[in-house]
Image (cartoon, rainbow, N blue to C red; front, side, top):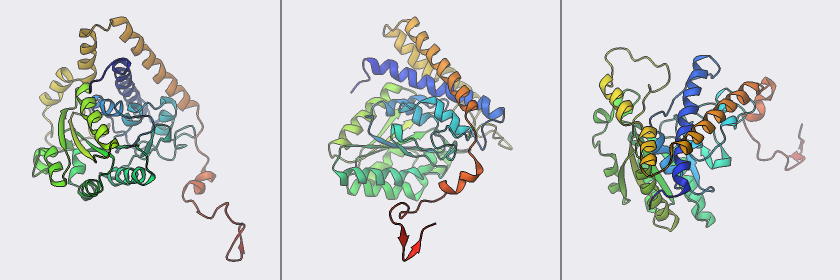
Length: 338
């Protein structure tokens, strides 16, 4: 299964949207307009987009704490996403989710979580729901290499395999869980081999090659959609920036400076893919049109976010809990509702 036709240019557009959005997000964070922390996926765009373009519009997805790129990879609008990062009422979660806890039903994202591995059981449950509803919807689950050592990873893969659930587990292996390398934290650093213990295929792909990620994910989607069960895909990628923007690690650098610079210089997924498109015969002008469109979309997203109001404090309780009885009955156990 190859990435063909219009989807090739769309993949380039989405990768560039992630890159430019996050570069602008880091500027806004530095200016004090984005609260909390900012985890950029710059350098990991091919792993994200290659997987997302293999999905249908109605397929579901879960993300991680590093998840601004995932909704963009699935086709989300930038305006509400930037407003969400700024905690504004115009955000996709009305400013209540922020950078690490957002959801976007418009593109099938049911959850993103700051908890390492937190999305894995949710994706498994979502796939179980599809099976019980008798639909051919699949769920794509993103997580990092650090999550592989969490209990939720093993429990979820075991359940998904037992029940042949339509879920694709995709590990964005950027080599480091904050500052701890895979070599120092995994008894078996070849993460794809973990799949054999659960009776499912395990595939390793070059996460800097959007076409390679698409090919592997498309095969896994077909397998899941036709009742074949789950697949574990490991996309070996690299984050160009720190674990979160502005993080200072005391002591010796955990990543050699030469390693980081080599990836930026030689393995930038957007530069690599742009070169491929030009070699295939796409003209420079067509790519420049996409690049200008993306720049304008990011500019408009910032303008929208800055113009959006902050949530009113008095509305907070309405988003803290939900009563299953609200609006259903006028009284409960003889007590009138207020």
